[in-house]
Amino acid sequence: MQQQAATPDASGQARALWLSTIAFTVCFAAWMIFSILGVQIKKDLNLSDFEFGLLVGTPVLTGSLIRLVLGVWTDQYGGRIVFTLVMLTAAVATWLLSYAYDYTTFLLAALGVGIAGGSFAVGIAYVSKWYPKEKQGTALGIFGAGNVGAAVTKFLAPMIMVAFGWKAVAQIWAIGLVVMAIVFFFMTKDDPDLAERRRRGVKPEPFSAMMEPLKNQQVWRFSLYYFFVFGGFVALALWLPRYYVGVYGLDIISAGLLGAAYSIPGSLFRILGGTLSDKYGARKVMYWTFWGSVVCTFLLSYPATQYVVSGIRGPIEFTVALGFIPFMVLTMALGFFMSLGKAAVYKHIPVYYPGRVGSVGGVVGLIGGLGGFVLPIAFGALNDLIGVWTSCFMLLFLISAVSLAWMHGAIRRMEQVQHPDLLGPKDLPELEALQGLAASQARAVPGGASTKIAAE
Image (cartoon, rainbow, N blue to C red; front, side, top):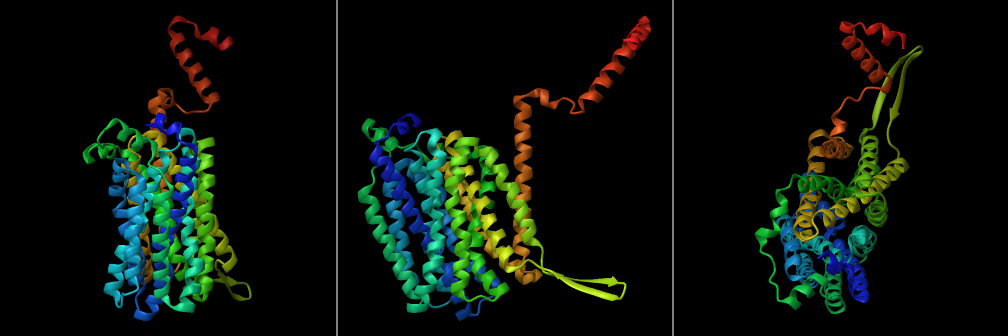
């Protein structure tokens, strides 16, 4: 399969990459529509933070759960037809959103809108088949930059909503999906692997065969990484407008623009992550990702705290809190590191599982997308239970630290299997020399050679 994809038609390859990226951007914009509409709906329906978190996370749930199936279908029937059907189905659901009138109907509409999020698994499998292994990191990084669709929604949706109402946002986004589906279908080609199978008359592999790699623990480790780097990114993209309104008292337009300031680097730098993964290796990029994320989330976790110190002349009071500008800089830095990690995770998959990119990429995307569903709900629940705004970053710090520890432990075990000498003692060279000398002396005592050793 990789040999077939190594020398594809140049024009078809370019169109596959760039049209897939644009289509994913449109889908992601629709997928994130509740990050803006949800704030107005929360106000209109007087929702709690938990109910708000459930509403904005519901599209992410649908988009996550269908990724595995869509990824397998892409391997079986080709990304061109599957991607087109995903966009058309999501367009219908997004249009119907404009007819929702209470919390239950909004949740049902959100389930349908979430179909747009399944486009990621389709695009990953489709684009990877057009490129050889040494270029897949960059290509998939470019495709993944379609995450910038979150910023598109945050920039445009507030202005449209203020001018024409929230229903207009849903209808315009639905029309955009239909237009993109038509353009994509008529301007792209079937991937080289599918074209070759059709030429030879080979039937698609059964679903059970596609699922075989999921028995490997490595797949689930990749899934945890993506739970943080992608699920955390989506969760913050949904949550930050609410955070800015609640903590810093901004209006919805300003909050949406600042949320976009987080989403843009968190999307565009995915291209850099893919390029760095091709050049330096995905493993090294994942180390950069997790160390940077641990530092950022630790600093963001610290709640505003008032201190009273017993001074010489009486109590001294002061407050430690993260200001508006430092907060914005740290969230953008966190988005940058998450962006590198998103590309690095998917650099692994075509290398380790070249014939199962759809199924493996689907399950990794499923778990990552579930992070985007679970985490906003958890953020809202933590707000309700603990009453501390920074509790969301406390949770992200815990996940990033656990992921880093598991990754490092797994890598050390693999290195020890490949190089058994690493299991030996790790003492300082000087100490090892002294230990060797003592052992030699102990062996030499019965023969009277100890004096000779000492003299030497």
